[in-house]
Length: 340
Image (cartoon, rainbow, N blue to C red; front, side, top):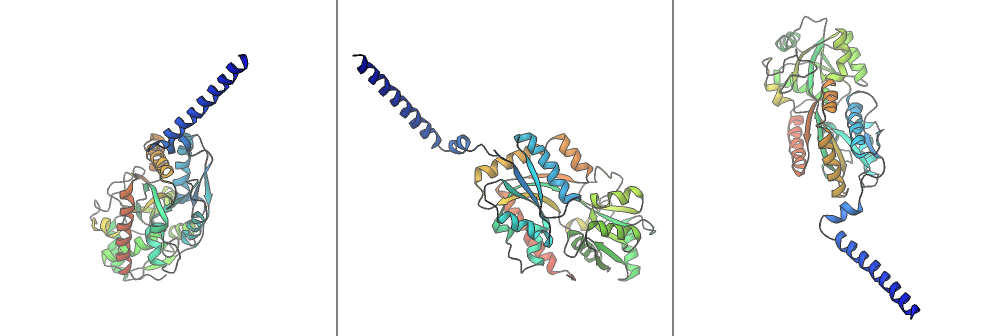
């Protein structure tokens, strides 16, 4: 009798275990439940690939974001620099990593919408191979001049260029970069001419501007911050709808009487992207977290101090926006005479 009771008790236990497993399996197969119950992403460090060298905006944007995401998730976000070939090496590196959401790319306007037209022989097809996680910030460009020139307004710069009749110079970190293209678009919109001088990097370009090797440039605040503070470079206007919080005395191009430059020089931004085949639930988890931390006062202040403006966007519409921007840039580049 005792053996029979024990056998029945053990059978009951086995039935309950099987039943619990069936219930769990059923729950996990319900729509929306599987990813939540089985995927605790991220449960290991996430690598943010930076396709440019250390320092400057390219490093600041993802590093400040990564610090906030680390607090949000309680998981490390590691900055991984893969510079070279105008950002192509970093982008190619991402494509060779697993599409699991643990390696993403911090990409600029150049990487996603411009380079494909400047370098048509590249094998990269960013709009087909990457998918946006979130747009992060806009990088308003400053129109700056060597401070020894008697130029204190955008009108005076345009007048100076007209008098020079193509003998003035403008600098950029290298051919094909945003400062190169923005300078060319400024000349086109103002019907003036100047010689483009490409340098080997932003630091060399800014040093050349401060030394008077070139007369002007169109570049982000962080690149010229030290030169502005030392008085060797003067800011004339910012190519943005609003003034920069860090330079409240510098007018927008609209306020300076050259609102047409807002349409002539498209927005410059940074965005976080993943491989196209990354699981949707992981992309959405990261996207939601990014949008959340972009609202934190600390990160807003840090970005503003770097001359950046929060431009938080995500969702399916962002991919369509990229395609539209690519078309805009393709048309603009066709109308420019660029010596690459």
